[in-house]
Length: 384
Image 1 (cartoon, rainbow, N blue to C red):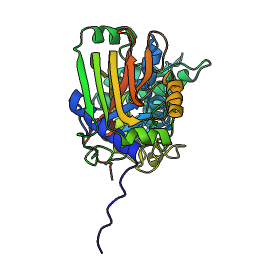
Image 2: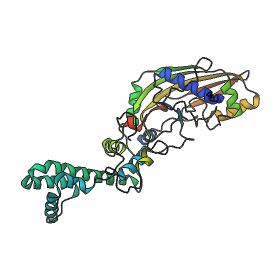
Image 3: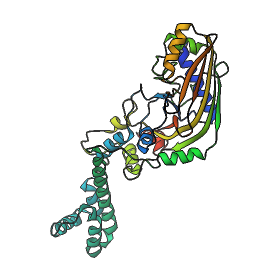
Image 4: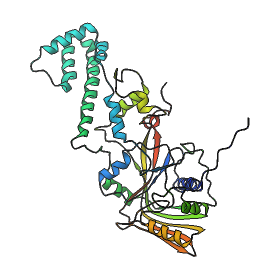
C-alpha cells in the first residue's frame, strides 16, 4: 500500500519553520536542542525574573509560547520526585549485618541526650571503630545516605512557605548583563522565499505548535496572518549583544545524583515502596512531567529588527495591524514600553515592522532543550 505523504503545513506554520531554520543558521545553533521562545518581553531587572525562565519544563515544540503552551516547573517536578524517594533502614542492615544492627540500636537507645539525626553517621563511625571496625566505613556511608535524603526532603519542603520561595539558580540578572556587555554582536538575515521549511530533522521531529500569528495572541489561521505568511517575508535583525546563558540549578536544593538515580532505577529503593508519584508519572514518554529540561537560554540585547512583507494589505487590515503593533509583532513579539518601540507602517499597502530594544533590556528568544536522560548525563534512552 503506497505511503500517504503528510499534509503540507498551513502558511504560518511553514513561515515559522523557515524562521526557525534561519535562526539556527545565523546563530550557529543546533537543531537537536534549539527551541524558540515567544513572546520575548524584556526581562525585569531581577534574579527571580531570570530564574523563572530557567525553572521550566518546556513542551516538545520548536516554538515555546509561554502564554499558550502548558509547562511544568522544573523545581516542582524535581521536588515531587525527591519526596517520593526512600533509603530504607534495610540498607544499613545489609551494610553491617542484622546482629551488628541490633547492637547499634541498643547502643543508640542508651545515649542521653539522643544525637541529632545529622550526627548519626559520625556517632556510628566512632562506635563501630571500637567494636566492629571492619564495617565502620560501610555503615557510616549507609547512614549518611539515609540522613542526607531526609535532610534534602526537609529542605525542599521549606520552599512551600508560607510564603513560598522561588527556586534559586546560579547566576543572576547582574551577571547576565555583565556577560551581555562583554559579548559579540550578530545578525539574523531571513528571506522566506529562499529558506527551507523542512524541520523534520530537528529534536521534535518537526513538531512546531502553539505559536502566535502576526501579532501576539493572533491565531495562526487568522486571515490577516495567513495573508502575511503567504507573502515573501524578510527579516534583518541586528543583535547588539548575544549570549548563550548556562542554566544551573542551585546545588543547595538540586541534587543531580539523586535525580539520576531516580531516573535510572524504577524499583524500590530508591523509590519508596508506595509513593504518591511513580516513575511513569515523572519520566514516562506519554505523560511524564519531567521529560525535558533547559540547559541554556539564548539571550539578546540591543535588538533592532526590520520585517517586510510584499503582501498588499487593505486599509482595514492595515488599521488592525497598527492597533496590535504595541502588543508585539512577529517574529520577536516585543511589546512597546520601557524604551522598547514596535511599529507597523505601510507603503502602498506593503507592511514594514520595526522593533528596537535598549541595550540594558535583555530578551530571552530561545533555549537549548535536553531530554532528561541527556540532562542527567545519560545516553538519552529511558531505562528498561
